[in-house]
Length: 106
Image 1: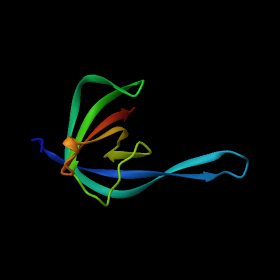
Image 2 (image 1 turned 90 degrees about the vertical axis):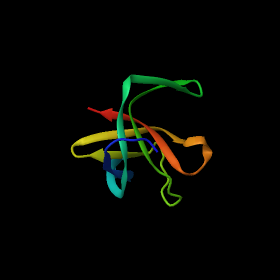
Image 3 (image 1 turned 135 degrees about the vertical axis):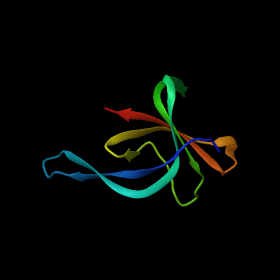
Image 4 (image 1 turned 180 degrees about the vertical axis):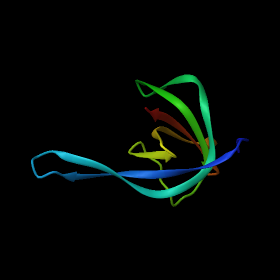
């Protein structure tokens, strides 16, 4: 695991509801508190997923938990900051640690 101060991020899941006029209203609901290490990426880190270039501003390292599924449809909050999940890496596919690539929303 990565060394550094541990923080607790709140994992949120989006909930989409119909507004009755053909549109959709999106809201967020807290699901879990996740303890791990939050680090700034070195500058804005660019990497390619498929044919798409993605920008990551932070990395979050946490323990693997088979009961929690991280997807790009979820996000984290930390105090007043919001982080979108860009990419999930199960490090070495060993089911021990996750490295989550995050984008801070400003």
